[in-house]
Amino acid sequence: MKIWISEENAANHRLVRFNCEEHSDYRYLGDLSDAELSAFFTEIKPDIDAEKNLKLIKYFGYLHIFVIKK
Image 1 (cartoon, one colour):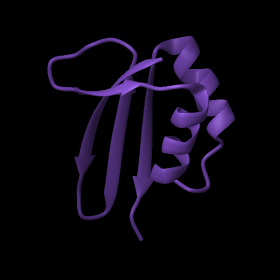
Image 2 (cartoon, helix red, strand yellow):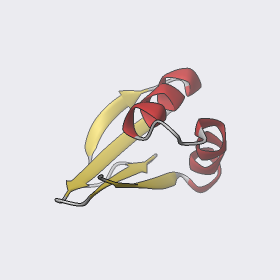
Image 3 (tube, helix red, strand yellow):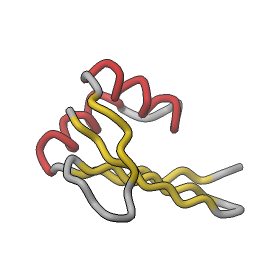
């Protein structure tokens, strides 16, 4: 699946946006397999339900992951 990514980092949170279509403010992440994308999700947020989020991005074409920094 071809994925574009946008990230915002703040002092107390991180917002990572994935999209299956090209956008001007997103950078191309690559053509990732399901396993590679699931591994990338768990790298961003270790306690994420990678299988559920993989289904969401396939269905909607985009996914936002919000991570609170501790």
